[in-house]
Amino acid sequence: MTSSSAGLGQVREQVGRALADFLGRQQAVLAGIDEDLAPGLDAIRDLLAGGKRLRPAFCYWGWRAAGGSAPAGCPGHAESPDRADGGHILTAAAALELLHVSALVHDDVMDGSETRRGRPAVHRRFAAHHAAGGWRGSADSFGTGAAILLGDLLLGWTGELFRASGLPADALRRGQPVLDAMRTEMIAGQYLDLLGQATGTGTVASALRVVKYKSAKYTVEGPLLLGAALAPRPAGADAGAGAAGTAAGTDSRLAAACTAYGIPLGVAFQLRDDVLGVFGDPAETGKPVTDDLREGKRTVLVALAQDRADSAQASVLRRHLGDPRLDEAAAARVRGVLTETGALAECEQMIRGSVREALAALANAPFTSEAKTALAELAATAVDRAD
Image (cartoon, rainbow, N blue to C red; front, side, top):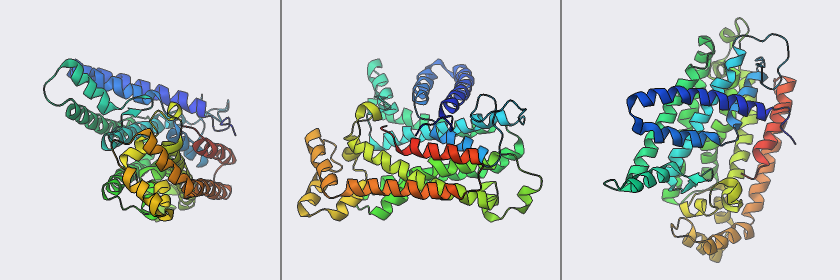
């Protein structure tokens, strides 16, 4: 299925423009502090140049699902006049790319990843910068420190771009609790992921909890809720909203539909990511397929294999998962266990089941018909991918 109705190309273009404008303003700020800050901004630009822009797209279609108008240059735009605030929704949505990239930078530090999107990870990039300069101290420590700071900067810039989007103050007040929750849940999920790698005792249930909070909620549900919260409200709508509606900045039925569609689709998205992390093509994913195994990630795929493994298979998993010296031959043995135990097949079945659940929820959602069509296409785009 194509993304024509979802207008992903248009979303990418508008979001890319908003990010370029924002980084241009930040370049002037950083240059006024010290020219040595330029390499950090270069690294951020390189990271933001890639990506599918799915989170901003879900935010945009959350806006449209709640009745927000289509700005010029965006999918669904008509020649009739739009509300003045419509043109700013994708600037607000672009802030989610900053949030996502902040998570990637920190995640790569925690996992010790060498590459991201086909380039050296930020901490490796700055370690190389240190080594090339012949500076004092540890190049690796310098790279780690620089990456932590850049990730923090991106996290701070998330709120700055959101507030500077040009949307009305009342819309920003409705959206702020949603953005706050996304940041809290994402960091909580990151810690649970780190904990699972450290203890090595993850279960399928604990792995699914990490999937939900580290990825699913801030990839699909949160952006949808944010877009819906930012959409113009009919007079008196906020006063009549229940507790769930107040928390989401929109009415409770709409918020419940965003969750019913968003959580299972977000889970499917991350399960696909986990499969690609072990069985994908590095030329497509931008990361070696041994990284997740070398880092000992306790994914749902791994947890399923551990539950089903016989003694010989369990020995392979114990010996090789989390081995920093893991080579391709050992990785192939682990992939063999993931396949032979049926873990890979079950994970694929979970992906299909989660997508079906999301689409069933979408059919009954109180969204505009155009948004339903676009969100069905985005579901396929999110899951049927090679990177």
